[in-house]
Length: 49
Image (cartoon, rainbow, N blue to C red):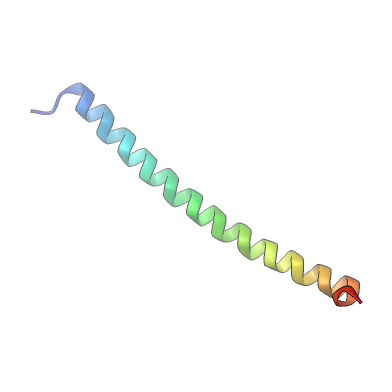
């Protein structure tokens, strides 16, 4: 029989999984934006020459 505490733990586990997924997605988006930024800086500054 699931106790109220078990239900809270299950809800927290589900929330943690959701947040981990969101964090992973955000990190991927950040990496893509960072690459675009780096590419733009190379174009602006002529590859460091």
